[in-house]
Image (cartoon, rainbow, N blue to C red; front, side, top):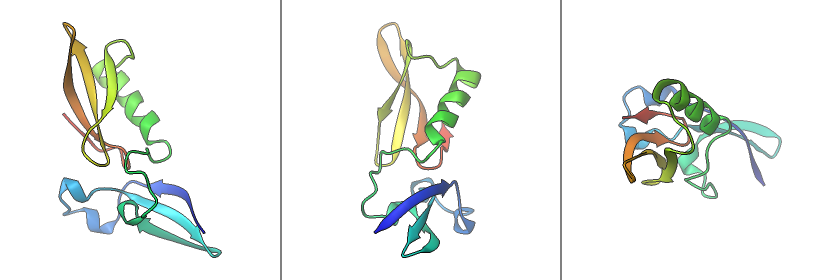
Length: 108
């Protein structure tokens, strides 16, 4: 059985990767061995599950830099492995920030 025991935000091969390839790395324990595997290669992984600590870090950053609060902001699933931080303005939800839930990379 494979147990995911942590994650890191990037690996050596991410320097020139396009955004769609930035899924982060998961530290796994398999048969008493530790290894890092690209998270998107783990077949059992839910692509919308946040890596440990990433959601908290992203929300804290949004609160500090953009005034994020649960009354006027929400996180909504987007393409595989990504969320939109949406802001409600005059009753309409707008996509404000595009976020990778595995490594916390955001754009917007």
